[in-house]
Length: 194
Image 1 (cartoon, helix red, strand yellow):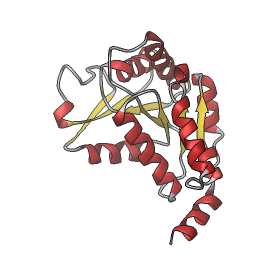
Image 2 (cartoon, helix red, strand yellow):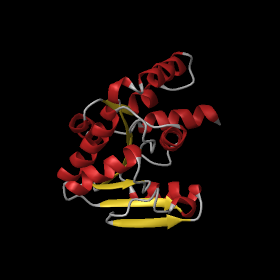
Image 3 (spheres, helix red, strand yellow):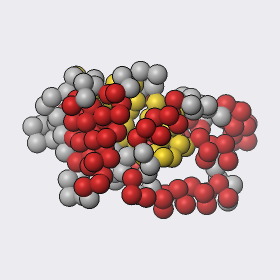
Image 4 (spheres, one colour):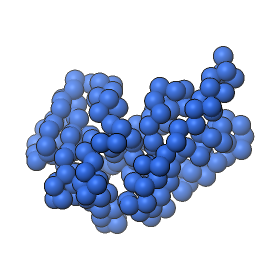
């Protein structure tokens, strides 16, 4: 594994613990020699994440859409910035560059990217690890909803278990490195869906 794509929020008016966790996650990736792939932003968790990696000698690749590639939003000090015309190309490029995926707290964009990545894993488009860094219990209500979806038969237990959840960066990275994709669940889901 050489790179991890991290999805996270860009809002600034948030609890400092979220920013600290993002900076620590970036630093952890850098210390382990992993390239950070992310949305290219300078604000909120996105900026803290990138700064944490850069401050620790890490490589950071931003992938940003043209409309957001402006000084107020785009991080100026990345190892590399790629610009795409539309959000779908941006997500495809981030997917292409990453060996694993991780979501930190965020809003609609973060949740969209997370669930698209989970859906791709469910139908066998990729077998890469997907994790949630559950800072301050932010994702706990979402995890409760996913448990409900599993109990009601909408998600296979193997697919639910494949979403890795930790609250500390080092433990999260260890879980990602030890991930085993539930190939049989993918085959079973595809058979039952046809």
